[in-house]
Length: 155
Image (cartoon, rainbow, N blue to C red):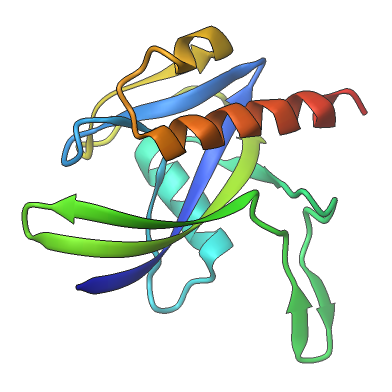
C-alpha cells in the first residue's frame, strides 16, 4: 500500500467554499494532492490549489500564525486546520493519505479555472454542503472550515 503525504486547501470566499468534482473519485472535493519530494505540505497545498483552480491563496491558520517564523535552523509554519488520515481507493491501487488540510482565502484575482483532473468546479454555500456527493469526512471538514472562517471573519 502506497503511503503519501498530501496538502489540501479548503478555500472560502464570501461564505462559499470552492470544490472540484474529482474525476478519479467521482466526488466533490477541495483541491489538493500528493506532496513533491522538495515541498513542504503547505507549499503542496498552495501549489495544488493553484494548479486545480487557478487561484492563489492565503492560508488562515488556527494558531493565528499565517507567516513562517524562522529562528536559526528551525521554522514555525502555519498549522493546518486538520490532519486527515485517509484510505483512498484508486484503480491502480490503494493509497494511505496523510493529508494536511489548510483553511484559506483567495489572494488576489478570484477567477477560477478548472484543469483536466476535475469534471467541474464551483462555489457552494453552507446549505448545499449537506446535499453534495462527497465523503462524510470531507463534509465534516467543510462544515468545520466554514465555522472557523465565520469566527475568524468577525475579527
